[in-house]
Amino acid sequence: MKAEQITLEPRTFLGVHEVIPMSRLTEYFDRAFRTSAAELGRLGAHPSGPPIALYHGAPTDAAVDVTAGFPVVDEVSATRAVEVVHLPSGPAVETFHVGSYETMAETYAAVTDWITAQKLTVAGDMWEEYLVGPDAEPDPAKWRTRIVFPLA
Image (tube, rainbow, N blue to C red; front, side, top):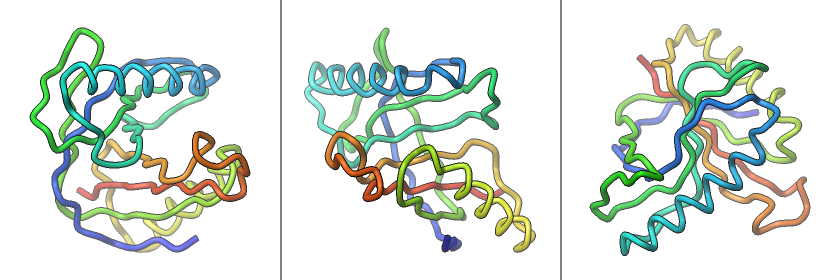
């Protein structure tokens, strides 16, 4: 695992926000990405990058507070189905997970250890960007996820 400090540019995304049990995360992602794509189309907007899942606070086995959708450059408004979320700019740590989602806990453990060793403080919410996933690549060994922790 390689982690590095980066500087984020502000970005906006449109997504579905829910608090759900961890066991329902896969079903939620399927629904959230379908709903977000449909709303973008209805609004005449287009995704400007890969799908994003923004985690509000630390997920637990009991519940995950998450917003999932797509980044946009178009001006969009929230609807009854989706929210507009502004991702922060400024310092952050990024790393990349390659492989199945079932092994992401190992990447998270390594990056949080690295953040602690560097004496950095995370700002709270963090996100994942699904650069290559099951929708484009059937082999989980080739899936690639960008993990971003904004810094305080």
